Structures are given as C-alpha cells and as structure tokens.
Image 1: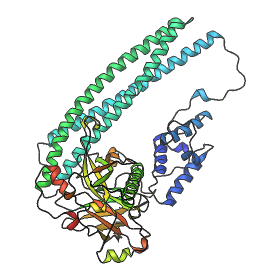
Image 2 (image 1 turned 180 degrees about the vertical axis):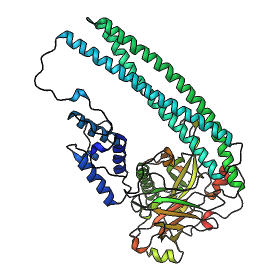
Image 3 (image 1 turned 30 degrees about the vertical axis):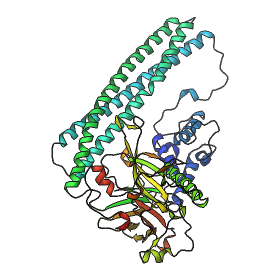
Image 4 (image 1 turned 120 degrees about the horizontal axis):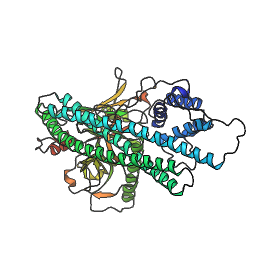
Amino acid sequence: MKLKPTLGDYTEPEFLALVERIWAVDMPKADHDRLINHFDRISGHPKGADLLFYHPEDDPNPNSSGSVVYYVKDWHRKQGRVAFKGQAASAAVAPAQGPRAPLDQAQIIRQRIAQTQAEVQKIIADLAVSERAAQAALADLQLRISHLRQQLSTQVLIAQRELDIRALEGSEFESRLALQRYQFWKLRVQLKRDNAQREVTYARAEKGQWQGIAQQISAVYDGYGAKLNQLNARLRQLQTEAEALLSTAQTQLVGLRDQQQLGPAQVGGQLFAPLAFVNARPAILVDGALSRTLEGPRVDLQKAIRSAVAEFTWQITSNARTDQVQYAAVLRFDFRSRAEVGRYGVCVPLAEFLPIEGTDWLSLAATLGRVNVPFRMTSGTYAVPVGTLSQGVREIKTLFQVELAPSSVAITASGVRVRSAIWNESSQTYRFTADGATPITVSWCHPDTLEVFRPPTSIADYRLGTVRSSPVPLLETFTAPATLAYDDYVVVFPADSGLEPVYVMFRNPLEFAQEAGTTPAPVAPPETR
C-alpha cells in the first residue's frame, strides 16, 4: 500500500482501504503504528487518529470503517472543501460573504423549485450510471455462463476447471452487488416522488411548475420500477443457469481429481496460517493460499473455545459428569467457492487448553513424544435447517463443523503428538509437516508489510463464506463416539522464535470419501497413523 502525502491525493475508496487496513491489525507493529500516525497526520479531522477508536455517541454503526470515512468527509465538507481526489465541491457549503438581503415568499418558492429540479436531474443521472453498471455486470455473467457451458464439454486441466468455476462465481457475486446498488435507489426515488406530490397538493403559487416536477419524478419512478423488475428477473434466470453449470462443473472437478489421484485424501496438501498473533488468537487454516484476514471470526472462535473449556472444566471438577459423551461445536463455516478442495485445519494457542509452563516442549518435539491435552478438537458436519441459509439461489444445506470435547472422549489415551515447526529461510515461514504417507504441511506466514500489501480485488480474496462461532456454544451429544477420530498435534516453534506451542487439528481425511459418496479405502485412523 502506497502512502500518499495528503488526504486530497486519496480517492474515497483508497482512503476506505487505508482505514480497513488499520482495522485489520494483521501486520508488524511498526507498520501498524506507521499507518495510524499517517492517518492522524493527513485526516485533518480535529480528533485525528482518535476517530479510529472513539466514535461519537450517536453513531449508529460504530464498527464500520465507512463511518470513519464519513466523519472525515463530512468535516471537510463543513469547512467548505472536498476531502478526496476526484470529488466536486458543493456550492451549498461556501461561506457567506457578508449579510444577505432577506428573501420574500416568491423568491423562497422559486429557490425551492430550482433546488428540487436539480435534485431530480441528479437522481436521473445517478440512476442511469447505476443501471449501466448493473447491465454490464449481467452481460459479464452471461459471457461467463456461455464460456463455462462450452468448457464443460471439453477436456481441461484441473487448474483450468478451478479457474472457470471461480470466475463464474465471482461474476455472479458482482452481479448481485450491482443489482443491490441499483435497488438502493428505490426508497430515495419514492420519497422524492411523494414529496413532489405533496408540494402539488399544498402549493399556493407556482403550482404548474410543481405539477411538472411531480409528473417528471413519477415517470422516473415508474420507469425505474419496471427496469428494476426486469433486471431482477434477468439476474434470477442467469443465477439459475449458473447454478446448474456450477453443480455440474464441481462434480466434474471432483471426478478429475479422483481420476488423476490428486484428491485431498490421495495427496498431501499445504495449509496456510497467519503468524501474527499466533500466541493470542486461534486461526482457521485454509488450503492453497492465505485467506484475507477475518479478525472478527477469530475473536468469536476464541470466545467459543473458552466458553466450552470453562463448561467442561466445571463439569469435571464438580463431578457433574454424565453418561452421555458431549461436545461443543465451536466453529461452523463453509468455503465461498466450489473449486475448493475442502482441506482445512484449526490452530489454537496451547495455553487455551493447559498450562504450558514447566514442560520441556522442545525435548518432547525432538523425541516425537506425546502429551495429554485435556481438550481435543475433531471435525464434522452440521445440517443447516431448511430455508435458513443461501448464497445467491443456492441453498446451503451443510456446514463444516469443528467440535471440542474433553480428552476422555478420545478413542485412545496415548495423548497428542508433539512435533516441531522449522524455519524456512526461502519462504520466510515456519513450517510443520504432519505424519503419514500423504502429509499436510502447515506454513505460518509473516503478515504483509505496507510495501507489499495489495488490497483485495475480488471476493476470491476471502476464502471462507459463512463463518459462525457462538460465544456460548450448546453442548451436544456424539451419536457414535466409538467412531471418533482425532487428527491433531502440539506444534513447537524454535526456541529463538519467541512463539509458544500451539494446538493444531486437521479435518478427518475419511470425510473426503464420505463427501464424494465413495467407499473409503482401508486406512488407519488419523490418531494411529
């Protein structure tokens, strides 16, 4: 991210990206402080950087980065100047040059008429811009649909099929956004029409001009409503076509991976995790590349884990044990794209589960030892209630689920494997490779610095779709506790890293065969591999 000398050198979207970058808190402290100081210097607002953290009491949305941008923009507007590059100054905020002569009633009415006419013309122009954007998005969606339809009948590489799926998904998402922006105008146009009709009803002078304005805005509203219905119908039709193609493409993609022995249960993979705050926050590990930061879900996941640990600890220490084998679903989520392999993991500071002082973790890792961890995590699925969750026209029926339970539920009492993470100089990451013939490697990546950071260009930068963690998860009962499998490790970083041990769990590989509807090959449970 390139820092610019003054506020006027930023466009409004660029300044919003700056605020969101500060709020993400996923960079080295020195760079983060540098961003805050930069905001304080260029914003021009009397509160400076305090505006990032202390909002006005009447702010209806204090957790919105857009609110910060609004307050900066509004303050500069009140000073009679524009805040951002490419924005025109408003004549209405120009300071008065001495006392003005009072206006008579006729002048006031003519002034209101002129202002209303200008507002109507601006609405017409803005609607035209928004409509063109929606039409362009739908046209792109149509092209993506045609392209994927042609590709489905040809032999392509796995990587190309993944790109085709992601491209269509991204286009469908952008089309939905464009239609939402166009629909945003509905209430505003309706209010302007109602106000104009009210002026006609109560006007005592210039009634003819008010009638002309009312007729004009009514025609605009009717035309807008018809066009909105037309565009929504077209979007729905294209979404239905896209959904059918994506479903077929996903099936073909899974088949290609299996045929070429490149499925998630057949080859190892690499999961990526942020190194920032590895000692303080849990993280969702995703396959292939580091997802955009999801600080909110990480905090929610931590609350869920702590709540479940506290409840199970109380049960154990108070002898309130039950005959049922219970667990807490601390995380439910899905991937945004159907091109995803479905491989994932979760990394949690080990201190969330047990005291880490007094144990020679480096020695345990060097000898491939094991340790008893009072709580362990495993993977599962959650059946979403019918009609409660969707993405576009696709109903989401199942979410991935991460379950936390006391270690007494484990299928073995041998403990959790302790392994080392090593520093990789070429990639500047800490790496840990799990056991097994097709092992998973986890790479903890340093956060981007200001010099290399690139703002997201598409929804594909966010790998996860729905992410849910209840602050107080309900305790549920395992239906088949004897079939549970734990694929987890305690990972120990080098002594000079300054990092504490972490607990890492992976998705059970047996789930991939079940998900594909195939019979899994005989394989030892992850715990015993």
